[in-house]
Length: 516
Image (tube, rainbow, N blue to C red):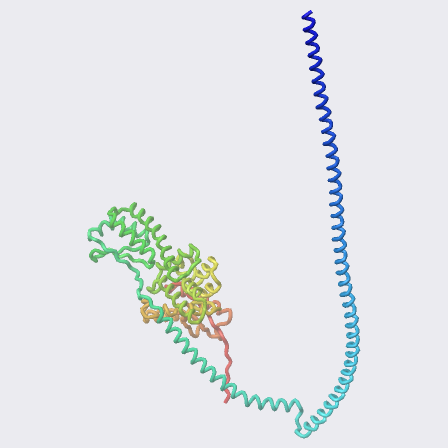
């Protein structure tokens, strides 16, 4: 019974708990449902409010846009109205201008008609004047018994006779004044240039003396059976003169470059002490290579001294070779530098290009550096070199014309020729005596005088050209060419001379009568 009661209590308790729990859950559910309904209701109210606000804002925005569009349309209408007014005003102005042009055209037509009428009147008056002039001319011709053309010639003849003497006298006076002024200015210009430049007077010789520390070395230089001296002379191209002169050996050659190489080689051999053919050849090769570098240094030093730039390296080496060339004892490089300085000074006085004048002066004798290697005169070789290295046309013409072989086409070319003459002719520049110079020219003239049919011969340009005047009655035009060839061949076979000699044969016929 107790167990049953206990079970019943448990069942009652569980049922009660279940009912209480159901009530609580149901109550919470009902509350949640109410809250949800309230939230939904609030959300609907909020959405409705937001919708009303959005509609209100949209209406306001549309109203603003409408007002702005109306304002913009109003402004466009005003602009169109202003433009329309302007067009109407312009159209009115064009109408007025058209009226003015029409009136002006009518006025011009009237004036043109008046001008045509005036021209007709003027032509009629001109015809009357011409008739009167013709009548007066006929009357004057009948009175003077001269036609119009004869009278004109007579007047012109008298005027010409009266003026010719005055013109001739005026021209002669001006020519005399010009000659005096030109001579004076030329002398002043040359004197100033020569005064501003001064060079040392030093002539090159054809021999070099090598000092020996002891006369016993002469025997070593000669070597056994003369093999050393023969080797030296063979590879250097220089003659060794070993005589009774104490402690000295003389090197003789007309080529200063060979002489210099031989001198350095011999001095190096003496210092080294090993003198035999193999050692001589080794030192000669070494000295030759060193000499090439020294030649380039001579060229660079010259360009630096003269302030000349942009020169081809090969041309610099050729310029350096001029140091080892001579002309009548005058060093060719020193002569070229002197001509460059003088040409630059003369150019500065005349307002010419000083740098170009110096360049032309330096290169005027460039052909002498290699004239022993290439056939032809130093002028021709120099022109070819200048063209090869793309030198200025003024420089090329200066080289070609400095001896008068070609006409100078620029002031600088003339200045180079003057500077060349000054450098060569100044006292002490060259060691050729006046007697030898005259003797050489006389010999050149005598070569041609011995041929038949020749009247006179003249050696000009310091013996570089021989002008032969033939007898026209004995030598015809074709024979003149044969005479030129014969003279050339005779000069080549009988004379020794530097460079080339140009032979010019002149043949002319003159007819003369004497009125008594």
